Length: 65
Image (cartoon, rainbow, N blue to C red; front, side, top):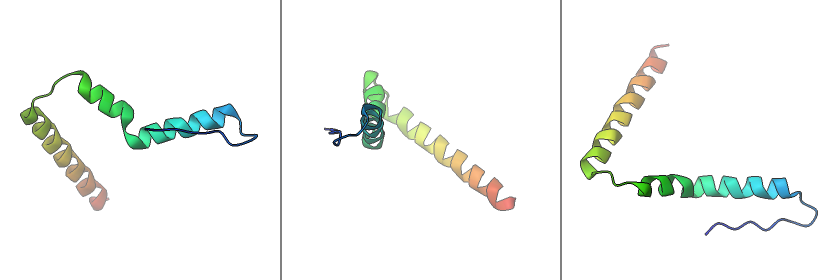
């Protein structure tokens, strides 16, 4: 569970920003979106492999330059 307590004299906007950063690091929003619909395990593996190939291609292009 993510919780943020604003320090004394701290602006509420700063506390909200801290809360959003903690949520992002905990991957709360991403997990919620993932659980909204079922994705077959084979589709997950296929997407993971596609991202891996794409990343390797990008690294190869950067290495050439």
